[in-house]
Length: 323
Image (tube, rainbow, N blue to C red; front, side, top):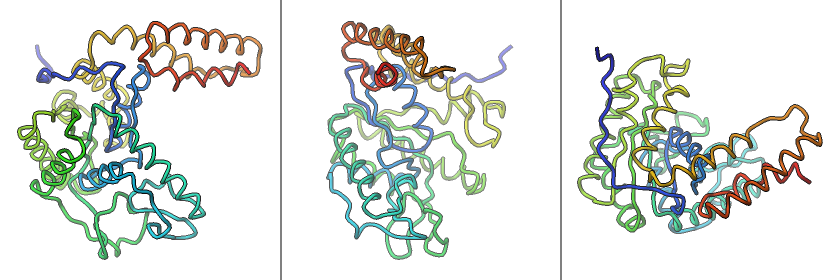
């Protein structure tokens, strides 16, 4: 008997290997896939400005990265001795304007480099609902400011298509673009409003896929809601996918997006990352230093066999302990 409706994902012409550069922008769901790609040795830059949920903020971030324009103190606000920007996640806020600007402009610089180098850009859309300042534009993060400062509005399919199509045509036209809709439910909007929001995103994405040959859709939303379709695949908050669900969606992504010829290198990179995440009981011991030395030497050997793998990101985990 069949107890689930297993999704049949359309074959993809996308075949990523370790020579590719990938930029991922969007909701917290993209963080999970990016983390797994890093652990199998891919060159991935993820959310330079922090997690983004709505299409307007995603489009604005791409515009900013494409321009490379730095932020100035005039772009910042201060609340309770914290300097911040509505364009960034709260992690970029700081007690001094100088510290905040340093973090933000480093993100602009690194993000601009990642965008220029990327041959694949993955955009994960979380919600059609946006918060707009009564004095200005849509914000990426409200930073716990008073709700009276904002107006909540629902983006239309036409608005989303226009914004994303604009940045794709202007800044991503020589890259493969993957769109996906986050399966994370925005229950604060109300379940009915969340369903409406996701439906708008899904229609907008479909229009973009039909309009542009360089744009593809990966069905993470459908995998979670139609294939897994059970609360045992959610975290205790009943909103976010569990680690089991994320692992399953990762396996679907891996089969859909990654060149099978990259598997050997991925397995080697994954073994190294597993070793790097190991927490020794005695980090200052001679045995641990010897272990790290062996791992560093192993990375050097693997770098000869698999030169396109992103070994520099994992190597420092072992170099620190060998000194």
